[in-house]
Length: 255
Image 1 (cartoon, rainbow, N blue to C red):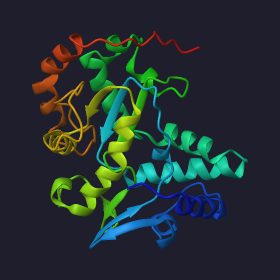
Image 2: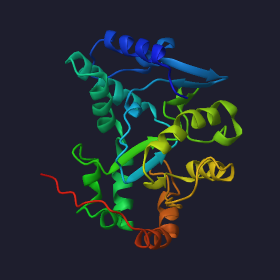
Image 3: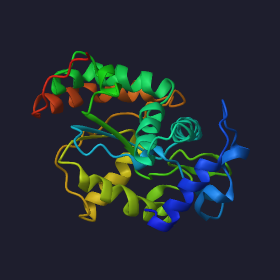
Image 4: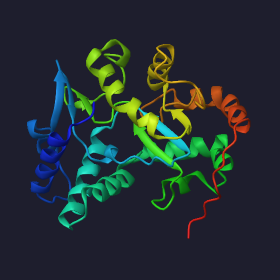
């Protein structure tokens, strides 16, 4: 789902009107002024961080949809930037760097990517460097660009499955596909089986073509009890796949 220019302008002006807070609550942000759509108990809310797209990235990490924690961090960062007279584009970029893979998910994803050798593939000393704001090799995104909540709780990709729900699948077609086309054949890493299922359906429907997709990477959430088992089962295959791909990425060294 993409937002038209009139709606986008209204959202920006509304964000500028919000007060600065050390932490926002669901009562602050899960409101009609920021709601983009709904279907039954499924609701979609605006969040600024995924409006920033790093089109020069060599690696694209794809999650399901931003969660509440990401949304809150994104708003807190973007509103502070706007209050300091930053442009909206800069505010979105700052929100992206602050919110992407926030918390334990970032720790888990870095550890697993390091183990399969992504740092060698990209010619960097450590995967953690990809999350530096100066590094342009990484783009993180979601199948559904804006936060989806079910009964105001994080949507996990199940109940309902994205591919079985027209509202959710239309959101993928409207936001993820245009975003995919803006990057020049990056290494795509779907985070978990729910994301993989959607990508496989898009492949079957010939909406995308499989060029460099790294299958088998588990969702990095700490709540994913099968994460370590799935990672160990697929680790060798992912290492082999990476070793047979090539990238033209220059070496990145943090100054």
